Amino acid sequence: MSQDSNGTLPDSIILPRHIAIVMDGNGRWAKRQGKPRHAGHRAGAENLRNIVKYCGDIGIEVLTVFAFSSENWRRPKTEVALLMELFMDALKQESERLRKNNVRLRIIGDRSAFSARLQRQMGETEAITAASTGMLLQVAANYGGRWDLAQAVRRLAERVKTGELAPGDIDEAAIAAELSFADRPDPDLFIRTGGEQRLSNFVLWQSAYSELYFTDAYWPDFNEAALDQALRHYAGRQRRFGMTGEQVVAERKENTPC
Image (spheres, rainbow, N blue to C red):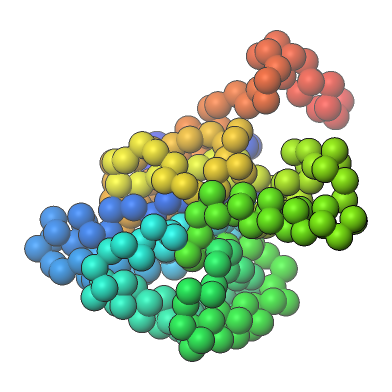
């Protein structure tokens, strides 16, 4: 366990199975440091390496991070080009480290907009880590929550067109089954760094019941101790999923071994 201002995380703490993070504030961190924006992105990539290892060490099952949204193409071309090169370098440099740490990588999002070279590297890194049985690291690249829903609906429409599926069979479960990472639990904890308090089109459907945690810390400064604070916040929440607090307590007692 890591140390923070409140001491170590207790062994009995309830941890989320799946954490989703909007890694915001790299550019503003760089500006505060008197550095160019790309220095902030590099610092953010280094911090991600630390957070990935820490999450794996404490037993998080899935970590999903927002690396590049479908809206980020609107940024200056020079910044986008630098982000693409940083992404390529990170995939090359981290593949063996991820494998050694038993972390499996999955890229979610529409890859078609990326260069053929970058798409190949994505596939190669995923293949290198495919046998890992520890934490799943999902990197959302050219991803958007609305895109995710649109592609799910598109696939369902194709199944209706072929007669495989009747329109009346389309329910929440059918839609969820066609979304990205349908084989994994939805995020329990949604974290956004950088001071903004919005979802920004990230895992919209999957975050319907996520606990939301916003922090003013810029992503390069969001270290293990800062994550511990978010985990403490999560552990203090009562997740009711539409039930009353009394029902949750009763259900917990019922499911607790004597």
